[in-house]
Length: 326
Image (cartoon, rainbow, N blue to C red; front, side):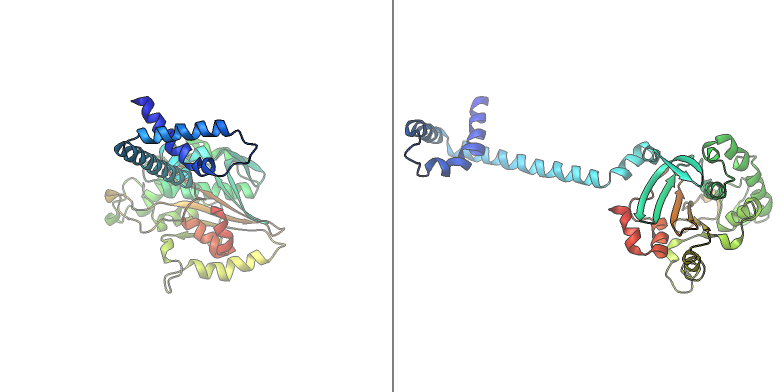
């Protein structure tokens, strides 16, 4: 029975497609006896097959074709979203394995060339604990900015003890936030875990190493970009950032602490958003780099529809931002 099925499959996959050639007129020099024997064998095999067997074989071939199509589609879907799928199970740090530079210092990350003079770099971050992403966004941004100025040690990025001393349960940053905002009982600020935009600005102002207000912006909800009366980002780009980028003889840097949609301001209910880092650095020669970090598993920022890419698109143009996905 198994042999018979193999014969049927061979017949439908191999013999039928070449049958027009077999039945075609052959040159006189052809070996007529061999061809005739092949024709006779095909005719006998065809005669032995019942209609039911033929239909079963056709159904099986169709079934195999459908399965091949499904498997092919699933593989294409996986390959298209491989970064996100792998990052979900293994963490995004597996992709941040290139040696990149921030200032004169080196660290692990990933680099994407967006234009001849524009590059995107995602540098590796420690994974946050609990809802401490606001601290990490400020910490990663300030550490990268110090590195650009030649003062930072990027080893701090992966130094758990250093982060613990700053915003662990007894950390200096966290204690400042608790003391500053504990009078607001409606926020339930007892542990200083979750930071809203006001708390991040407090951290930047007190521990930012002299960073000025015009050197950074805290964006609570990037969905408001482009909405009249709510958008603070577009005016900043048009009035401050673009003119600075056109001054090729002067280095320039701007730090974005970017939230993700609406945030809950109550520790008891947790947070409904996430904070990340984007640092624009323009060198004196006019070339630019965008440095980014995500403390929630080092998610691959350069993939998909991302709010940080949206900001880059506003500055550089959407055509440049679209090159992330090429």
